[in-house]
Length: 321
Ligand code: NAD
Image (cartoon, rainbow, N blue to C red; front, side):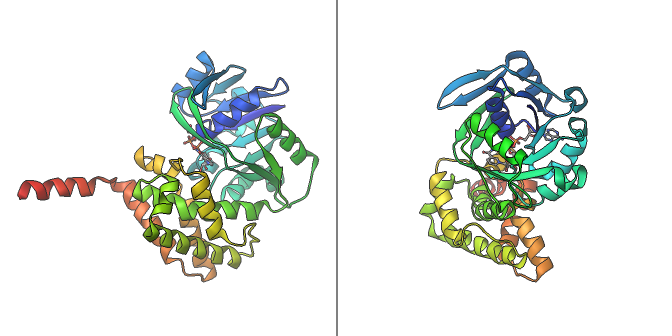
């Protein structure tokens, strides 16, 4: 099986590395980060698991999709802010028989990928795995959880069974869902409740549980998202998404969510595809979303100006005194 990963950062490297362990698979990692690509080609990919580094050498990396050839499966793992440009930029990986798979967070990835490769060539899902980049060629496997995949129309096809087998053999606990769109919304509501709040406060996911004033915001953001999902006719998998979001906080207590990592590294966050998507779709369907709008605006402020104001102004006041 030829598997190409588009966006070989934290998650792309994790999935690529594990899939490359099977002699049945030929794995190519595509990324625009040249230092990372060069390090993988020189020394393999170093995946840190439970403090132990494991070297995966049975894969290659490239910045040029045309050198990689057509894939059987192209797993898209760029941030959802750049999904369409990444698929277009790596179009050389797609042939007439290539199936794209998105396990990204945020809303809109399925449509953006479909616009380029055709909806019939797209599978989707969610992952509760966690990973973070430590440096060029080095990634930490930071969390374990289920991967759920499905055909967009919910049917059980040979190819979804192939992907199920491929991921399971690579060590990812995987299930097939007949409601993959509902699943993406379930994950969206969890991210809408947690990610912006930890991005703003700097807390780890589990620490949110200790602050009732923040949990009130989490609950309101998730309930707005639930109303928006209902207005779209989406069938959510979790009837009580607030309890589900709180369970995820507890289960990922030690996690530094990707939005917090992005804020700390002064990178653009996925806010527009998470809380921002709830605001946009709510606006279209006549559902009020003031809490999600506030969270979106606060993260956008931090993206532009960082967190320096309190320190800077505090220092000024101190000097003036
Ligand atoms: P990341 O930033 O670590 O990796 C993204 C990679 O994409 C980077 O290496 C970047 O150089 C590359 N890239 C950017 N533009 C590209 C292009 N045009 N072509 C090829 N590569 C390009 O991100 P991540 O944390 O791995 O997250 C990927 C997705 O998975 C996001 O939607 C995220 O929300 C989701 N996710 C992440 C985690 C996690 O623990 N990190 C868990 C679940 C879901």
